[in-house]
Amino acid sequence: QAPLVESGGGSVQAGGSLRLSCAVSGYTYTSNCMGWFRQTPGTGREGVAASNRDGRSYYADSAKGRFTLSQDNAKNTVYLQMNSLKPEDTAMYYCAARLAPGCTALMSYGYDVWGQGTQVTVSS
Image 1 (cartoon, helix red, strand yellow):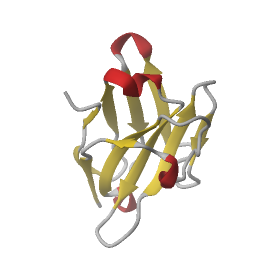
Image 2: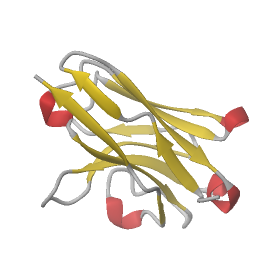
Image 3: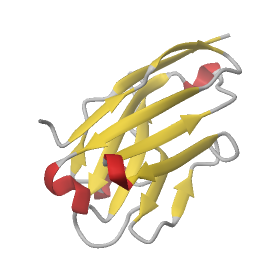
């Protein structure tokens, strides 16, 4: 099984909600930082939300007040609850884990393991 597997993407109208899930397996569960990133064609990966081992959370300005990252340790799953979705939230969303010490929060360069992504499409 892949170490990170995302699900929950789909198509929704503006103002709607989606909850993305990231199933974490194997060594990635000892990660020091978990993050959600998104990418549109022709752009780099943008950090959306992240959380370190101490439970500190980080959010992009575009996500504050609308997105919430949470973890269910019993299910080895990380979630991204997305509310009040906007067309500009349309992107491929990726879950990522950092195994090295520390947490680079919303900076994608610091993450070692990536999922395959799940597409989110928001229509106006």
